Length: 135
Image 1 (cartoon, rainbow, N blue to C red):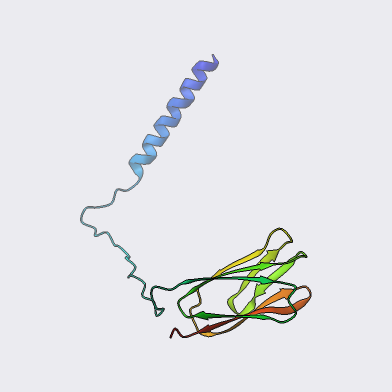
Image 2 (cartoon, rainbow, N blue to C red; image 1 turned 45 degrees about the horizontal axis):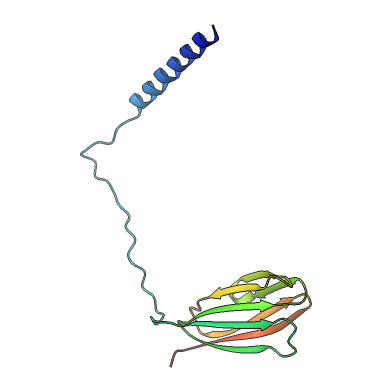
């Protein structure tokens, strides 16, 4: 008896789905299909940039300075003996740092400037990234 009810239920579902598919309007061949192709991105950054790797100790007394030419990528690693957070406020970046888990930032600067790297607790500057025009 249960098998018969299951069969009837399956047939009802099959009929309902077939009816629903038949009622959905099909696109007309006369209607043009629109495409929104995105033009290729152009960048004002120089091509052929380098990867610059910098490691900073969060316990430094004086902020470490790193010069990064515009168009180069910076891989910044911040190590700390204590848990905390590291931020680069001007770039909107925030990462956790642990004694066995450094904070990692991968930055491709798009403008020249001076960007401070902050340890948040206690709040102090531990590094400065200086992005300059490529020479």
